Length: 146
Image (cartoon, rainbow, N blue to C red; front, side, top):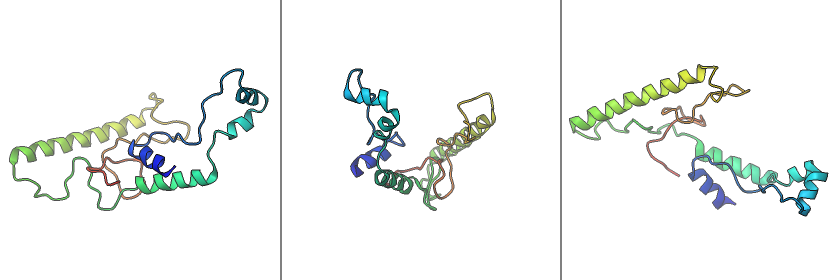
């Protein structure tokens, strides 16, 4: 299970697969159970409390941003190159990323875009380039440290 969770985390937030079952085929014992007792059949598809706790803990630990995180469009050192063309291109890239972040935030405010926020009014932030320290649901790290 732990190996599976690490692989899931490395696939950048793909849904958990362990503990899940496919819909049963018509005519099987599992399908009859689904017809007669759908609640029991549903509960069989959910992982145990321990599996859920371990899964959530691993995902939270691996998803937190460190205080010294360097994000896409940033460098840990200002002296990373002396090439003027590279520095100008990197500065332009940083400005483009800032515009992308602003565009995402503006689209989150548009109520006619129903995929931007649901009943809980949680705006889309997964591809916002910058972030703060902690578990934020945003930020694109410049490197992967898993």
